[in-house]
Length: 277
Length: 277
Image (tube, rainbow over all chains, first blue to last red; front, side):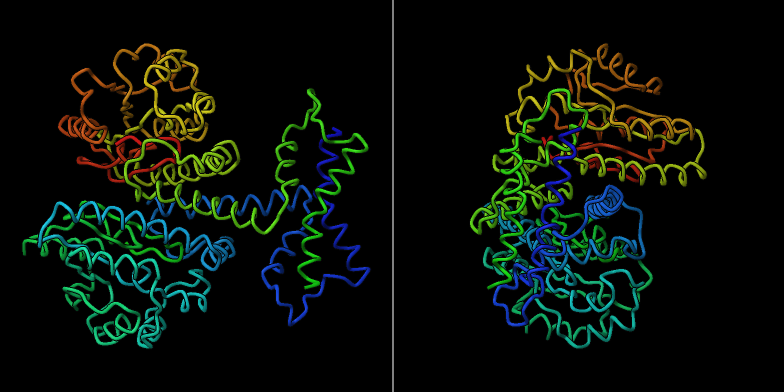
């Protein structure tokens, strides 16, 4: 048991030192003009008391939420309406920290490597389908104001955000998009946004660096009652009927990628905020 | 800068205390009969010096390897022959720590919830397909001796391991399996193992608590040159032709789940060690 006691002491050491520092008036209050903000976020981690109960509780939630997020990416979850409340801190930390960017970058690099290899063996008919929201453009500024997926989706609120036309590009997607265009792929933007938002969507895309595409397909009134899987499959089937060969498909929802007339390869971008069937 | 210096001191504290402990001969050497082995693996983490260079480097690799693992689970990676060498520590930590178990548990719970809801509306023809390796049985003891996926797959070495019949059950899969049987699903075990391993596979499964199944399908000589996707799709098609309705499919490889005659729902168990096309 000496080993366990020793380890517990080691874990407590930062707290003891922090308390000592507090007594000496040192390094506890972040100075408002401190030029090293990167060091500050570590403090809450260090002062957390690793009691057995706390540790088990926090770690158990973190583990479960990480598993929940991974299961979503692997399409293992049933349709879900909102992020589980106790996973909101995990989802927020993921989206606002480096992991989301890292995941996006890696998927874009895989897509890029595939695009280069596929482009060599294909002609004018080669096409790549891109979803828009959380694929080319990010609605993170909106979701940051709406609990990162905790709140049930509010169409009217979200529409107001869409109509600002201020959704930023996802940088790795913009790089991929430009490369795919340069390689000669036809690019089809296939979005669940309604046709009423065509103007603002075009403006938003152009403002963010997406200047050219072969077709931007928005959801018509007749498609409103269809699942995204059906709507997008139908549209892909039409592309095939027009002679295009869909070699790549990038989307943050499995409903962007599954169904019929599926792409030769699909790239699932991460999205732990919402689920569209 | 006081904040940064203070934080650095805080981060160094465990090292200082560890060194102090070492001087006092306490809690450093793990006692061979220490009954708290769980505390030991924390030590290397605590004594790691958080210099800026180390930290950036380590964190960048950790981020990238976590993204690589997630991308694999989402089927975003090209076929890969071995774990990237610099990701072996990440993969080992994942598999031997709580995250792998947590991921397996969550996928099994999702599958279980689905099985209960699906069972209500189906009759005798309802079937569930299970893969064997890394789905019902775990080869982790083998891979722990072979770099956790770093080494290229060695058929002869692996066969020797299979022939010991000592692969342990994945506990959450065993629970799911029993529940699926109790709910009245027919269970089909569809494995890439060769028919030559039928006897040892049956013995291994029974020894680990898998006592009943409706069919155990192993790879015949004629199937050896097919991809797993083709081989398993063909077998699922045969099940459908016999009148079964495949409602669930559990496997650790996308080639267990994709292709044709796909299950109504599929459950992808995590596996960052190897990829089978």
